[in-house]
Length: 179
Image 1 (cartoon, rainbow, N blue to C red):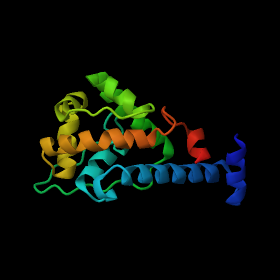
Image 2 (cartoon, rainbow, N blue to C red):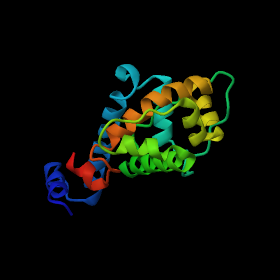
Image 3 (cartoon, one colour):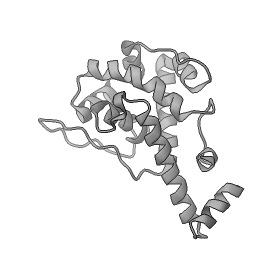
């Protein structure tokens, strides 16, 4: 156990592993919220693009676990979950990076994760990497057309992934503990 985790547990007055996990999960959601606010236009997390990005990271679109909600005639943006375990954020980020890399956007993603300038991605290439099923689901969740969704995601995702990987690599639970 890291010294910081031990001091964090002592600071919250608990000695249980559950207390420490709750603190780390809160820190992870804080990191995610900060990254989102610094990535979406105007920092507004209630916008459809923020919902789409939240669904990509937190919605388990690449690893299963959550079934799609039934379609409605007038889709409203689904709120971003606020009680997601830190491992879900890390798993979701890893799943998104894996999906984009497997879909042919690895060269772009590497610049978003690594140090230096983020290489832009064309909306069409991003759509090909994400795949039609993911785009259909995001479009349904946000009420946005796929083209508008891709245009905005092509702007937001490079910055978000860069913000979530400040050390130039995938963060670990230990990184979240250091935060």
